Amino acid sequence: MSGTNSEATITARIFRSKVNSYAIWGTGIALMAVVVGTLLVARFQFGAITIDGMIQAQGSNPALWLLNIMPFVFGIWGQYTGAMMMWNASELVMDQTRELRDRASALEQELQASGGAYRVNDLPDRAGMRDDLAQAIGVADEKVGSLGVLMLDFDDFHDVREVVGDESLPELIENITARLRSALRSSDVLAHFSNDEFGMVLHDVGGGGYFVKEVCQRLQKALRAPMEINDHKLSLQARVGATVFPRDGDNADELMRRSEISKQSTRIGEHEFVRYSKGMEKAVAGRMQLVADFARALEQSALEMRYMPQQRVGDGGCDHLRADVSWPHESHGRIPEQTLNEIAERGGYVYDYVLWRINQGLQDLERWRKNDLAGASLVMRIPGCAVVQVPLAEMLDGIVSSFDLPPDALVLEFSEQSLIVGEQKARVQIEALRKSGYRISLHGFGTDQSSPMGLLRWRPNEVRLSRQLVDKAASDRDTLLVTGHLVKMAARVVDAVVAPGVSNSNLNQQLARAGCKRVEGDVVGKLMTAERVGHLLRTPNESKQEAAG
Figure 1 (cartoon, helix red, strand yellow):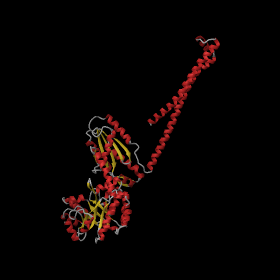
Figure 2 (cartoon, helix red, strand yellow):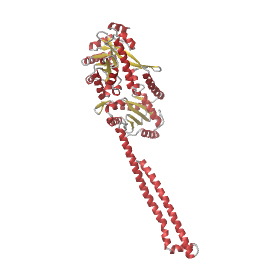
Figure 3 (tube, one colour):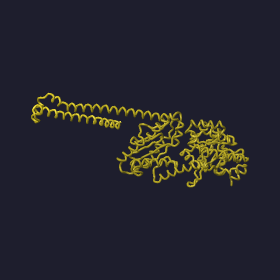
């Protein structure tokens, strides 16, 4: 508002100066008229122009008295008119400014209502944060770690936004803002750029690194606590990049840019918090190149699908194969499935990526079933990002119809966490898949990210135990006991419990007694190409020999 008043004052002064200039000219002309009139009266009345004659003319001629008043009249008129024009000009500028501000506000509301970006109005934006940071740098003590700069955004925010709906976006952002504020001190600056992008300036961080990390931990704890938006329970995971002044930069622009780079680097190593270090720019650029390489690999079908056999615990036969996709990159080596899921999401290739996986897996499954392996089934893990972004039932129905395959030959694996994040859409997806005849599986059962109640909430056909749980059960008696109880409980609700990573026959027998139907791991075999799968699935006896080999 102060800027608007200043502009109005300047504009009004320009108008006033114009009026004053004309008043000065009028006053000057009036003075000249007084002088000329006095000279003429003196000449005609006394016959000569002298000082005494001019004085006598002024003292005896009433017409000159009236003329003498005119310079004062012009001066007063100029001041009065200038003041009035200054007032009117100020009103005019203020009216126009108010109109522009109202139009801008209406446009902002229209953009928000149409699903545009939402921003918290009482927080500084990016430019405001830069100004605050620059001012803080100017007065900061010259000691290591006197200021901290954080940049924060969220994993899967697009999916979360799709779940809660655009109409609930302001409520979601305001809720996030309140939680971030609760983790900061009153002296710290919280800025909001757009939607899930936030920035923070931390004052007096002392040594820097330790305190900044502690603040990031408080932020994560505040955000992980479940929040309910539009009848959806959400738990958010943030990515935070940090720099410390003066070690990581000596000006606001450099510190903010490097904090952004640090934030991008969190996704390279799957970290929640990364502080800037030299060489990060190169790593982020390499990551961008990796996404571009992934797009080409997807287009050229350069990804590789391999399969993990799952052995029946009853007769040792193998009729289920779990698909595992990887990418043999010429520079980075073999890139695993989890990293590919993240690259696909960041690059915006989720739909094409899932389409390629399903199409490739069904091609191989059709070939196996035509080669006297009629009972073979394919277990396909669905990336969490696809639960919200991809119409799975529609996609699968279109692809399966082009193959000679029944829908129940395909087992679709989901993590319970991915279903919870997009629960409303996930329920619709799962119900549509179940109606089409596909089998549903929950993987990672037995971790902190899953619960026994998930069996009732999602009603899967089968569950796959957590690999970490099975690994620990192999060496820890108490964990084995807990795992056995979990298997017995799940076996009463679902058709099959699958145990991954079974490394020895003793563990295999323990899990079988508890109720596991299928196992995978060293006791069965390792990842293999589609060509090798046919040899393994011929008969139960040959399967055992192949696994032993």
